[in-house]
Image (cartoon, rainbow, N blue to C red; front, side):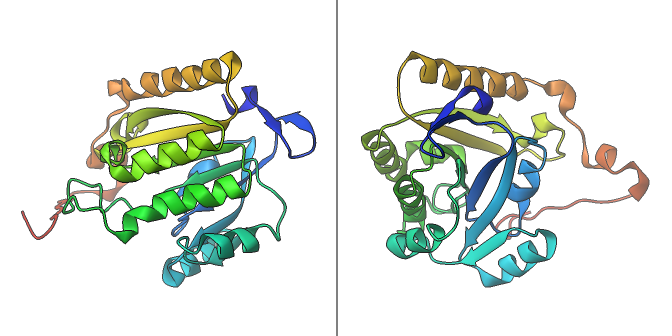
Length: 232
């Protein structure tokens, strides 16, 4: 779907083809950047995160630029990112604790990292934005404000839900992905609809479900125990 969208402003009007530079906000230790390596027409060229410890891991595994910064300081982050070439794609994987069923369900200042991250990408005029979080983000006041921000800036958006177990990962981990594209009209709506259809097909792939033992057959006998919040 990315290849079917026009990007205006990178160098006139052009198609998003190889290689489209991407920036990842809340890049963490590099999981998102590793995932983008499977997309031959996209290259992560920089990342931003607040935690210096996880950034040290990120730097050890990737050659692209990473910045240590607080996304809540929107203007400062925008200023620093504007010193580098523009990106055609921006991904935001903001903290999910305030929206997660495992949390307290209270939206704190931490939840506004989502709004701040989107504000940064909008100010940088990034034409394609991808947000990843837990499904309950869509029911939050944070997302209400986020959607208003995107729409007022001229973006169209759509949401889709995917569980990691349907992607061959031995873990049930349901996530929402929101794709926001600058512009409107039938062509944009059709591209977003095609993207939703593609992810809906992934969500129904029960044949991709594997157990932890099946995913690591050479490991031998094992016992896997996950305690959440101290509860067995």
